Image 1 (cartoon, one colour):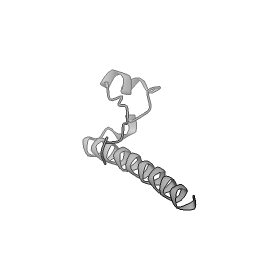
Image 2 (cartoon, helix red, strand yellow; image 1 turned 45 degrees about the vertical axis):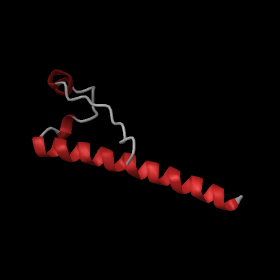
Image 3 (cartoon, helix red, strand yellow; image 1 turned 90 degrees about the vertical axis):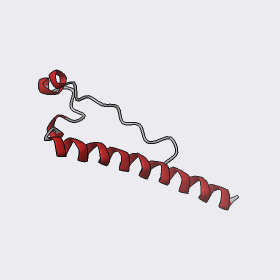
Image 4 (cartoon, helix red, strand yellow; image 1 turned 90 degrees about the horizontal axis):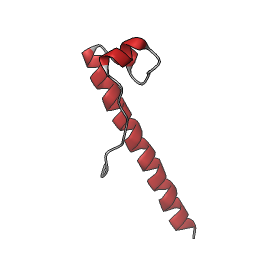
Length: 62
């Protein structure tokens, strides 16, 4: 059914958008704290020492 496939694709796009928005919120928080240069870059020694490593999980019911 074309309608079901369209709905599934729409849901996948919404899930992707939700994940991206969540990552942007994390980035904005790090920018506000002056730590954005260390975000998601575990190869930098400063990031490891500061323990700023985070996993990004989109909200469950966004």
